[in-house]
Length: 165
Image (cartoon, rainbow, N blue to C red; front, side, top):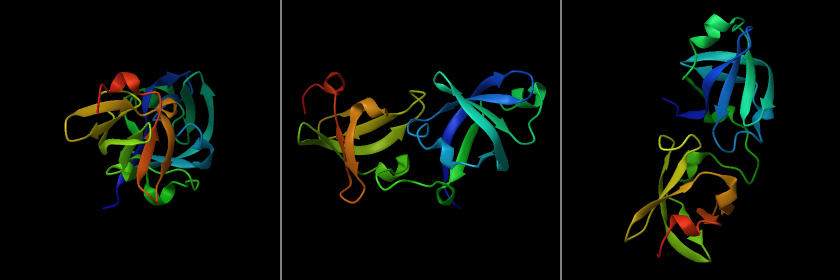
């Protein structure tokens, strides 16, 4: 069975005509325009229109035309399969970075062993080295660069998340 990639979660409704407020996971705001549909509980929904309002996506999906139907979807997650996601050369899926080296100040500080989306709405990198496990928010403010080919992520601004290596 093909793996599901969760894109975001429905947090509330918008208006009376079935629009949904979506909290997108980190990284999907920038390339959202590349998506034409989503799955919610094994059902495909086509995107009729969307807009961003503050930090939320306001989404109108085909077949959801009233607030009562929309309210039933609150709390559900939107997902796609890998073949549905179009990535740029410098982009990669969250699950692909498990096992990558974590680098900070030109020093390897551990290995990314998990991405935890339970402890934070945006998610956190779970990094482990020989001495400890620590977490860094999954946010562009903390990522300097990465290489899919070389399997590493260079972090920045994470002094407060780690004591000493």
